[in-house]
Length: 474
Figure 1 (cartoon, rainbow, N blue to C red):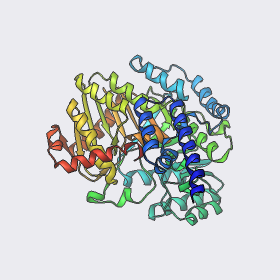
Figure 2: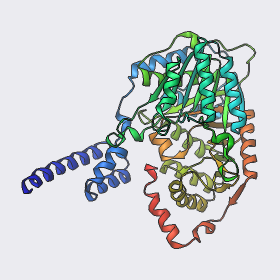
Figure 3: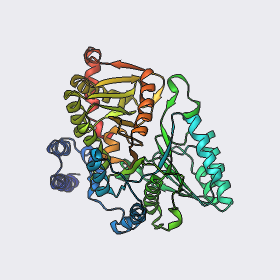
Figure 4: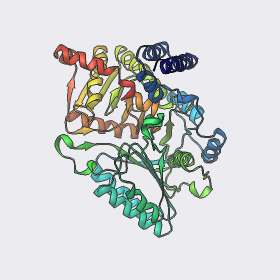
């Protein structure tokens, strides 16, 4: 036994030292680097396990070949170049350039958008579009549940595949852990090309469990697309009272569908190693769609060079002149976003944050309270949505810009997940989403005094502060 210890302890020490060197060589923010060094040094065994799952810097990995990814993006570039008289608003020119330069998120005009604010509106529209598909259906979702709604959607996809329509589906393996494999096998055997994103066969032995595809988007025949926050699950339709799920999803027809298609096909290459870039997947925009509603489909991921969507949020918040309205189901902001929110509010910008009064994850709810106190102290108006669970992810700024997609204001979305948002630079679109926010505000409680939260019992506040330490992992 003594000889065993002589072997194990030196090996463990070497592993810890090498891991510490890796943390230092990543050149992270000093606070993050120091935190991981402390965990590795003072939490035996568990520290190295936590680092393996949650601490590795995946932005230095290149899971998708850059050359292949650029080939996928070139098709969007060709369509971008063919646009005539595209008007880029001067007030947002640098933001548009930021997204275009970092992630090939090119701006497209001529967009017609429908807004869905409940599942009972969205899913019938989605399934109707599936039934009308002639060439292909591309569906990417974080959750594809084996419930009444999921089986309805699966039946339609199977029917279209038998008709000869190309049906490609990506679901997240961790998001669908509880779904039996036979549910997907039935679609697969019927001609639906369905793939799990980054499958996790042994979750206790891989860090892949921490990096998930949280995007929700769909493209039908290359001319119609959907993006937003709704997964394919019955709870979006049948929930009532506190169990009611309120969410926002968009249907887009026009140029931005090129961006949705490019995002899906990039992920399809990720899961299948098959490069699809034929022009048939990027049909011409109908001449009837002729407007200057400008949009970008922006994606971010833990393997991209920069956290694109987080950078966009920070820039929008800091450049706001009059107001910024945000809806998010989970509020665990990274330091740059927290700094931007507090700075804007202190500068006199009308910053409003809407979060659910109660979430579907108690630890997240506890951890978010201390962040709420910090933004309240700076003058941010915080609204607790009380008519169920608000799962929407919205941002509206100055009646000129808005965004909707899958991105939450939390560490996981900004740093760990694969996310996708549609950004619109159009007054009418901004006003429409602003109206959605104002309607939700009618069903919310305004918390404008930090004392309302800070006066809670000491042990409640202590527990929430302890849970906050786990915010990057939630």
